[in-house]
Structures are given as structure tokens and as C-alpha cells.
Length: 168
Image 1 (cartoon, rainbow, N blue to C red):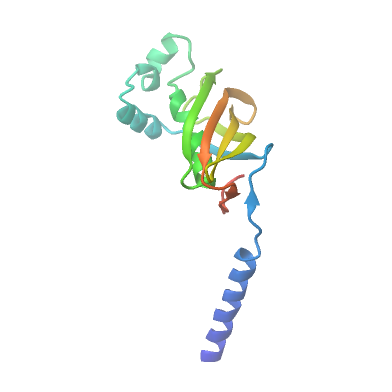
Image 2: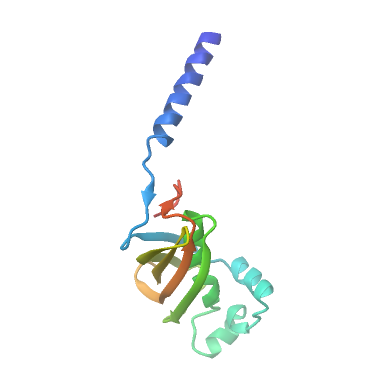
């Protein structure tokens, strides 16, 4: 029994080494695109309303939203746009978000799938850090462009953290 457990333990260790140590680090280059998909829930909207103090009934009351021409309550545009710094910081822990421009094109409703992406467009070294410029976009249900803009972030490195299990 001890031999069997030693075999499985050493086999497991070998698999771990093969899966993780052989992975070559990815280095961010202009043109690289990083993505994240998310569905926003009613609870997300309520929590964001509380934290931001944005209690506009367009986000929480279906009748109010319909009364001004929307299909239902809207997800806050800034909540949707919060996916951009999330993508950057999940790949570059310690990144500092410097700026963001946003153009809101269409509404996002509770339950819509949002695919958010950042595309590196310019990278330059600045005192042992890297200033990175990104095009930012969000698509609703995979096709409709709902937000676009640009972001700048200071990255501690250009080597991306391996984000296992998340879409890149």
C-alpha cells in the first residue's frame, strides 16, 4: 500500500511539473488582446448602486426604465467598464490604472452577456515600469459594440501572469 501511495504521489508531482513548469511566460506585445466574459445580475446592480451612491431608478425600476424607452433596468455603464481594469490587473498584479476614456454606445441589461476586451496598442518603458496603452471594447451578447475607449496603465512587468481557467 505504501508503494502504491508513493507511486501516485510521485506521478502527481510529475504531472504538476509538466503542466506548470514547462509553460513559457507570455510577454505582452502590441496587438495582443485579453478578454473577459461576464453576465451582470440584479444583485450586481444593487450592490454597485449602494457603493457608488448612484440610485438612479433607471438601474433598479423596470417601469421607470421602460417609461423612457429602455427594455428594462440598465446595468450601470461604469460597472460594465470596470471589467477593463479587472482584465489588466488579473494579468499584471500591481498594475496602476492611469486613465480611461469611454464612449457608451448602447445599453446593457441585466442578464446580457458582456465580453470585454483590452488590446495593447503601445508599450514603452518608464523607470523600470511599462506604460501601456490599450484599446478597450465591450460587446453585448457577442456582437453589439456597447462601450469603446482607450486606457493607460503602468505595468510592473510585461510578463503576463498565467490566468488558468479564464478566457484570454
